[in-house]
Picture 1 (tube, rainbow, N blue to C red):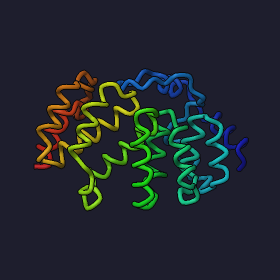
Picture 2 (picture 1 turned 90 degrees about the vertical axis):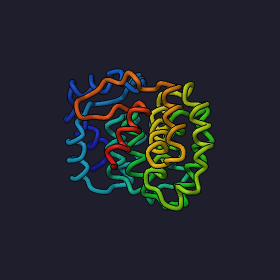
Picture 3 (picture 1 turned 120 degrees about the vertical axis):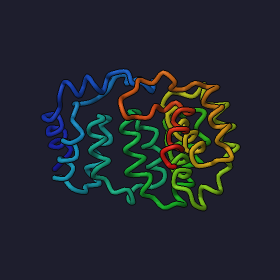
Amino acid sequence: MDVKEALAKLEALGDETRRAYNLKPAPHGIPAGKLKQFGVAMGDLRKLASKIKSNHVLALELWKTGNIDAQLLAILIMKPKELSAADMDRMVREATFPQVADWFNAYIVKERSPAEKESLREKWMKAARNDGWAARAGWNLTAAMINKGGQDADELDVAALLDRIEKEMPKAPPEAKWTMNNTLLAIGIYHVKHRKRAIAIGEKIGLYKDWPMSKGCIIPYAPTAIEEMVKRQG
């Protein structure tokens, strides 16, 4: 299958309801802006990817279109090990739709070696003040390290991370706030020593305090989420 055929299949699977959904303002405040999209359901994307199987050349061509459905499909069929660190750095900055960014982090970046991920994490954390999407990826990796625990997490300066969150999160772009908040939650849940301060920072900033709640879900407002997750862990 070439890129023209793949795009035609994606277009045929597009749905107006899904296109409208992708354009809705999200509670986390990330604007959708003008999207290149067909509006393909996630299940249909996965089925198409299953038929195509791994095809790194096609994946790169799909990515270049800037169409979010094409980029999501690209993530599912590309080979992470065939991307250089420079490729991943560029693509993280090009992924400016939340689901594309999060799939790229979950399916591509996290497949790299610990040393490669740490090098990228450090780079993206340094870029956090001028590139919101790089910041989203950097803080995502940081939260993942804390959630996973182990030696790598022990090497993080948790107090310094809290300093950055307290200082930077109020003015951070919304795409970065989401994973910064995830890092704050992880610290509060897994670092008893820093839990009180993590909750205090969450209260001070008030991020996601008015998040619309669904039954059975945990609001991402840090004070509430930390206390509830600690309680569930017994």
